[in-house]
Length: 274
Image (cartoon, rainbow, N blue to C red; front, side):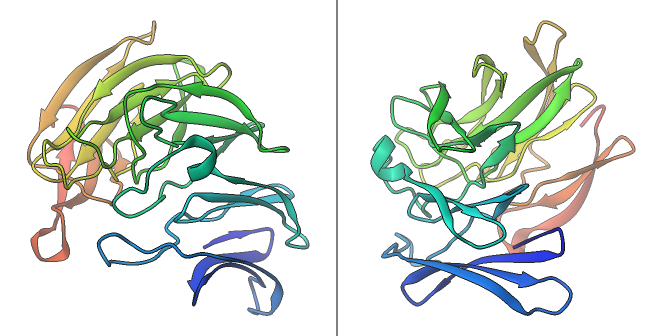
């Protein structure tokens, strides 16, 4: 869920419906509810979603269902403004755990890691209409991480850590200019295990980007040069984050190394050296 302007938005599954509920944040009183039928079933029997958080953009709220249905609703009333079935529109096969990446609002764009086999990897949609504005990349599938915005060397960029179900497993970090969809660089970073995912969001600081994955993959710090080429500062096998995103604070990275609760432990890394 998320909170905006005194309203709490909860996106969940109830029986065979995906449901977005808007409540008063201070009292819990329901203001409106929007539902649509879903027959999504997790291939691994884990959880039938949804997995993406609602996204608020002024008068609009966006939801992404586990089956790839994207809705844009009016914040005040819950009325549908536009909708897209991304799995049908882009011919995206169902991944291990369905569609999970939360879209990013960047200006007038809604940026989505659609992960189409053969491309696009990332698509930007017009927030007002849902129409595609640009597409980027063709190598990697949809991950479980969310696109992250940042200013690097004074220029706006979006960082996507892509990579879901594929044979052989593939994925990595993309640096994208949101104004045009141009990809500055793609940095491969993915487990060699088929049953693996990229799920930890990129962390951007000091013109650098940290990415990490579990399944014996570990972490990497990538520096972005002023011409938007890149170099690897360091890599480590001692900081492999599964689906949690680390925190950067005062020159240190904090996060949970490990894949599941029994084998995960809180760790702190020196961001300069790894």
